[in-house]
Image (cartoon, rainbow, N blue to C red; front, top):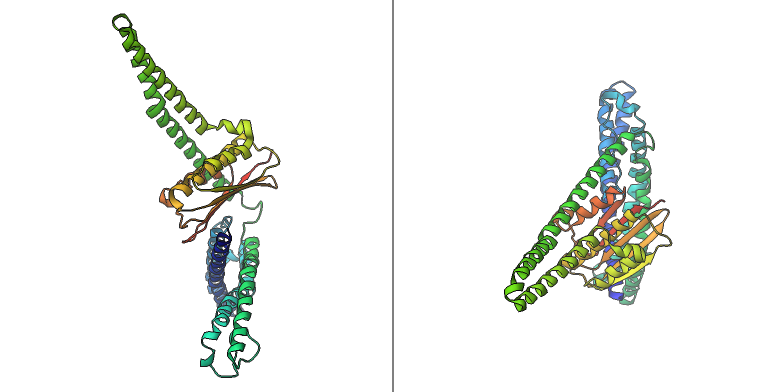
Length: 408
C-alpha cells in the first residue's frame, strides 16, 4: 500500500512537471506576442502599425487557442469563441481584449510561476547529487538553492539533505503552482456567459447526436444478444417439444429425454434473457440503489477493487444507470487492458453533481481511439450533459473522472 501511494505521488509529480513545461511554452509565446503587440501599438501612433493591427489580433487569438487546448487536456474543456472579425474590427470584440489581458498576465506571472516551479526540482536534484561531485568545483562555491559555502564532505552531505527537503517542498507545492497558473486562463479565456448561445447549441447538438448513436448501439447490442442467445434457445425448445410430441406414441422413454433437453434449453433461454434485461437497467439499482450496485461490481471484479461511496440520496434512475454502466465498463477495461493489481472506485455527491473516480495502478497509456470502450463511456456521459476526464500517462496510473448532473 505504501509502495502504491509512493508510486502515485511520483507520477503526480511527473504530471505536474509536464504541466509546468506546457505552461512555460505558452508563456514564452505570450511574452513574444506582448513584444509584438507593443511594437504594433507604438507604431500605430504614426499610422504605420494600423496595417499590422489585424495580425496582432490573430496572434492573440492563436496563443489563446493554444492555451485553451492545453487547459482542456488537463481538465474541463474550454470552448473557443467565434472567429475573428476581418481587419481592424477584430479589436472591437471584447473577447479579444480579455485574451490580451490573459496574454499580459501569462507572459509575466505565468512565466514566473513556470520558471519557479521548474527551478525547485532541478536545483533540488543538483543539491541531492552534490556529494558525488562537490570536489570538482571551487572550494567556496555552493550549488542550486544553497546559501552557504561547502568546504568538506560533511558540508556536501548537508547540501544533499537540504536538496531533499526542497524536493519534498516541490512535490507538494507543484500542484498549487499549476492551479494558480491555470486560474487566469480558465477565467479570461472562457466564453462570456450568456453572450454566445450558439456555442451551447452546437455543444447540445453534438451531445444529442452522441446520445442517439449510443441509443442505436445499445439497440443493436440488445438485438444481437437476443438473436444469438435467447432466440436460438427458444427455437431449440420448440424443435425439442415437437420431437417429444412425436415420440410419445412410439417411445415414451425417448420422449422423456427430449423433454429434459427442452427444459434445459428453456432455462438457458431464461438466464440469457435475464442477462439482457440486466444490461438494459440492472434490477439491483431498484433494490439496493447505486451504492449497493457498485458494491456488487467491486465484489465481482477480478482485480482487487476498493470502493469508497458517499451518496446521501438517490439520483434519477437514468443517471444511476449511466453511472453503473461507466463503472462496469471501466472495471472491464481495467481487467482486460491495464495489467493493474489494484483499482479504486470513488463515488461522491457534491453540489447536485454525481462525481465518479476510477483509478488503477496499471501500465497506463489508455487510448480513447484504441477500441477500449472509452468512446462509448464518453458518449453515455455527454448524453446527460456530463463530463469525462481521462488521465493515463505511460507507466500509469490511469484515472477516469466523471461528473453527472444529478439535480432533482
